[in-house]
Length: 455
Ligand code: C2O
Ligand code: CU
Image (cartoon, protein in one colour):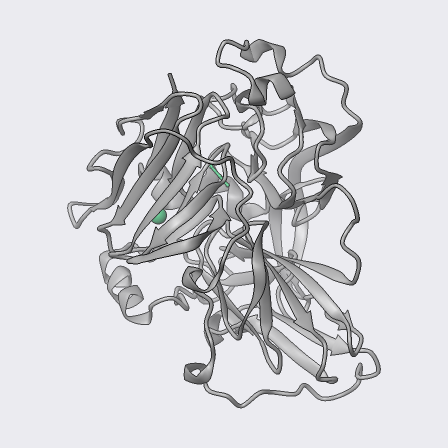
């Protein structure tokens, strides 16, 4: 195992899976299940182990796992471990790293888990049909040493097309652009329900806190398209980790935008006893379910407090506010550079999403050699934002929208707004063929994907 990760290219991929001593067995059964999103709003979800989100997997960095995935869905599937640096045959991408797990079949994923942080897992087959049906879950990798003490909650945000409510297509990101996208027919799936840990308000489970506590929230946007922006009334959100990777010091904001596939760990200082609401700042999104009560001990029957500050007075998170801890291998030598222009088929082909004018699988792969520093410059020349995810490697966010960062954030997904640009850097030391793609399922399906291929 270790030899594959740190060794040379000549290691055979075939030796990866079966032969290593795993300390932890995990079973994930994917199947349809009746699921109640909120009282009266029932759907047939597709779920791992009968629950949405799937079971919280929690292991220690460096632990070996064997995860047996059984497919009891009516179609093929595969599971991707997003943000975990697995060896590539374990990456869960049908057609690239494995044959899809047929209906009725099973597949054993075996790998050593690293790096530490808030990671997640989700289906990587027929993402348009499967991801927003519930096939996703959180995967927490604890660092060696002390397990973080204190109260902690996970918030897995989801979006649903149930056909039982009015579609909400407003994104908190950019209201005007969204109107334009609606006219162009690229506003995304007609989501009518939004959930926190599989439930829509008022069915969401309240977060109980005690005065004086520091509460850690691990937030994941598991939606296949929706951007969220969270606010906890009466409290700041202190961002401590981006995509699971630590900041040098916490950054306090009032509003936290979370793009699809991104994770944020935040800390809340419980200093204002009462009953408060954590919700999306877009009222239509909150009304369609994305709300959770935060209830201080002793205030269970209190009325809900509110914070009258207007949105314009609130401090909003952007990547430029954070200073990352640099955990990644130091680059040495000349970087390989690639420019990727994210484009769109325009009115003639509104479902087509491209990289340098081509749609996957016709995109040009990015060739790298083991040990290379690789720099990807991304330019978004399309009318929607794109959360771009790199498989198999975390990267440094060197710059974003014209700002060059002295202390790069470490991430595995970066959101590019329309006309936005970014530069990422990673060191190629996980041999294989790795997807780079937009995490919005329709964009990915429409072609916005390519591969990083080791020579
Ligand atoms: Cu989270 Cu290619 O995926
Ligand atoms: Cu996209």
